[in-house]
Image (cartoon, rainbow, N blue to C red; front, side, top):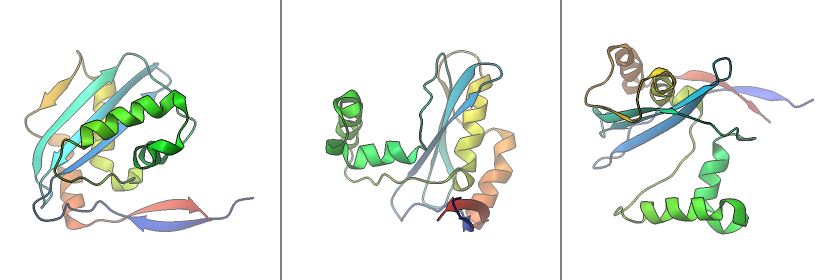
Length: 155
């Protein structure tokens, strides 16, 4: 039996002069739909932009999104099946002056999680959000305030 421990996690602001991009995906197995959401915020946590999108088909990953982050950071360690995808992501990232790729638990990524759920239910393809949905305001305020959420992790 694996032991687990409760830790507290929270969203973290970007460093001065940086923007922060958080993303998440959602799958609703009962209706066989999937979606994704992206939120872009400034260094104080203010809204810059967002995207929601339904996905016509979805891929069930047998692991946490941490595997995606690990693949981007260590592309040479992944087999041929996924190396092309990770290499392309790395090429896109190289267009920026500087970047950091990090994994965040869902409990520290609630705004992107909320947008991913909207992506499941939205019509059309990609929806660029000029302003935050009203329902997102309380989550953004909680993030900026440094509200911590519990997360169980395996030891």
